[in-house]
Image (cartoon, rainbow, N blue to C red; front, side, top):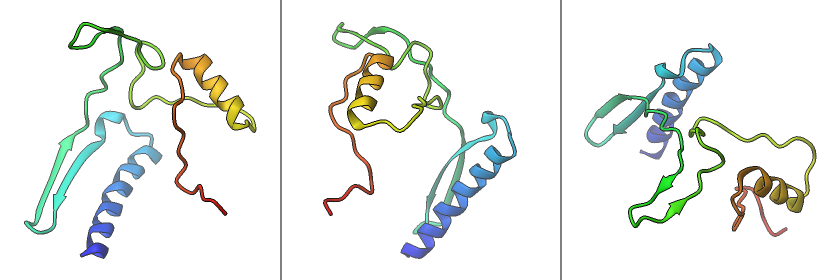
Length: 111
């Protein structure tokens, strides 16, 4: 079951990667849901790219957009050079106005 699920998820990701490599429009991407127990496969249109905008939360507290108004989940930040963790943190905070509370890397270890 684990191998089947992994193969299915990998195939669906690769379909979307081929679209990126072929420079297809982002509107061709799909969200996919599948359940092997019920033989269920569902392909949905991609999420709308809701750009960030300044505003207030449900309690009326104003919030700052990250990192700027109009930023979407498809945008990214690029940091050039070989930065130390302190330099990265300083640049990140300067560019976004957000503070770094925790930074995680999946292959970090204590060896």
